[in-house]
Image (cartoon, rainbow, N blue to C red; front, side, top):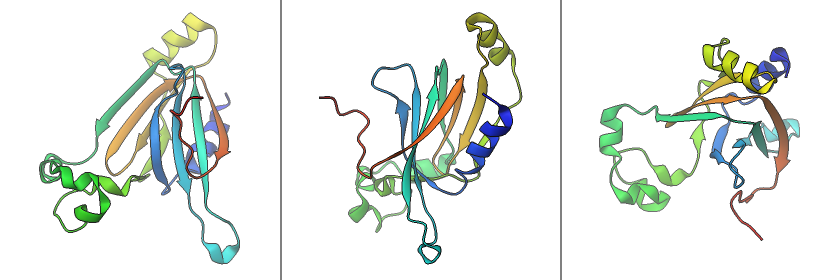
Length: 157
């Protein structure tokens, strides 16, 4: 995957909302579902975009919230929006995380070189920073597609 194209794709995620992230149900690829907002006055409707990080060999997730905020956010009532808004702490019940400062392509690393050599395809490393979690992914390719609101990645037929 061309790094300039990848960087452009990542730039387009800035300041939107992550509504889901995790490995797909077949456990090879990692997906990030983003609610992409736009100003309705310009005629662009919001959309849900699926960023599919293909051949993901590593996914590291960590909190981005400071310990004090996490300490205030332990109350289980915060996982539901309605009771949570009246409490101190991070309201997990909003069910999304702001992509700020967003996603960025990291420089080539020993890990990307090692996997590229082992599998014979290019690997990249991306770090996504949001207001509750940071996610770092090691993968080969990204595919972006629109998914419907309500898309449930783990529903099987």
